[in-house]
Image: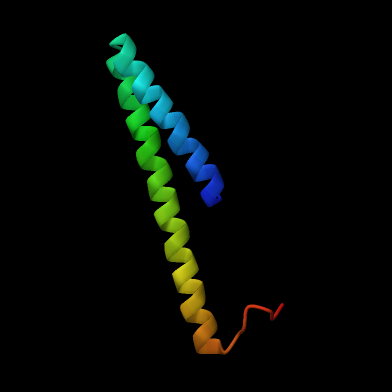
Length: 67
């Protein structure tokens, strides 16, 4: 999942949360909060992968423009 997809998922989760709050639907509100947390975790995972790849590349001498 890309960061853009994670952002969309966070926005959908926020919409669910707000909708749940507005209608008094606790389940929908909780579902929205959960969706937002999942998206945030995915973003953090992507950042960690990028950092690990960068470290690996620096150790092997690979440059960004290498195929």
